[in-house]
Length: 374
Image (cartoon, rainbow, N blue to C red; front, side, top):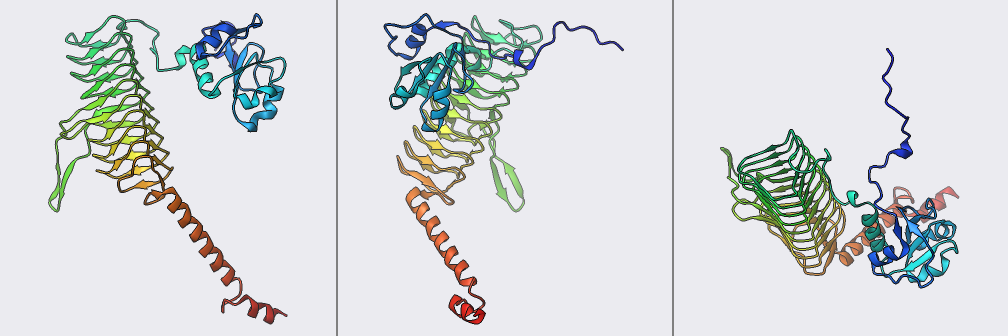
C-alpha cells in the first residue's frame, strides 16, 4: 500500500520547537541586559543563542568559567556575554559585552529570543476557550484567558487575563488563578488560590488530600483535610510535583519560590519567599521554611521543624531538627557542614587504620608478618 504524500521531507535540524523572535540589533541586546552599547558598534544582528563551540556570527554566547577557556578562544559567536576577568580572551571576531553575571544576562537574552520557552503555552494554539474545552457557566474568565481542548474549569472559578489553561488541565470548583499564569498539560488545581505569573509544569498536582490518619490498633481513621493551598506571585513548580492542601491550616508557598520536578510537599507546610527546592525532595507535614531556604536534591524534612531564613541543606540529607538561619547543614541526620565533614574524615581515618591492621595477618602486626615471610 502506497503511503500518501506528506509534502517536503523534514529533517531533524528543521524541528524548532521554540522559534526565535528576533533578529535583534546589538544595541537592543545591550538594552535588554542593561549594558552599554559600544560607541563604534558594528551593524550586527542576533537571532540565536548557542554554546561557545557551536555558535556562529549571529549567535550570542556567555562565558564565566575557566574550564571553557579553549572553547572561548575558538568561538565564532557574534556576541559574548563575559565576566571581566575573561574579556581579554574573547577572539577578535566576537564582540565582548562585560557584565556582572554573564549567566543571568544570558538567561535574559534567551527569554528575549525564545519567549515561548519561558512557560507552558497553549498546546492547541488557540485563543479563548477552544472547542472541546469544558468551562462551567458559573466560572468567570477575564478577557485574554486561553483554555485548551480537554481542559475542565469548574463552577465559581476565577481566572485572570493572560492566563493559559493547557490541554487536560483540571481547575476545581472555587479556585482562583491570577493573571498571566501558565497551567501546563495534565495539571490539577483543587482547593487552591494562585497569585499572578504562577507557572505549573505538566502533571503538577495542587490541593489534593493531605496524608492524615489517626492510627490505632483497630485501624487507621481518616482525618478530613479541610485547608487550602495558597501559592503567591511568581512561583514556578516543576513537572509531577505534588502539593497537598492543609489539614485545618493552609499549605503556603511564598512568592518567587522555585520548586523542581518530583517534589512532595505535605499538608500545612509553609514555604517562604524565594526558596529553592530541588528534585526528589520530600517535606513532611507542618514543616516551615523561612525565606531564601535552599534544599538540594533528595533532601528529606520531617514534620513540624523550622528551617531559618537562608538555611542551605546538602543533597541526600535528612533534616530532623530545627536549622538556624543562614546555616549550612548536611548528612543523616543533618548537622552543621563542618561537623559532618569532620565525622566523614574521622570515619575514613578509622577505616584506613583497620585496613592496614588486617593487612598484617590475623595477629594484626605487619612487622610479624614481614618477619615470617623473610
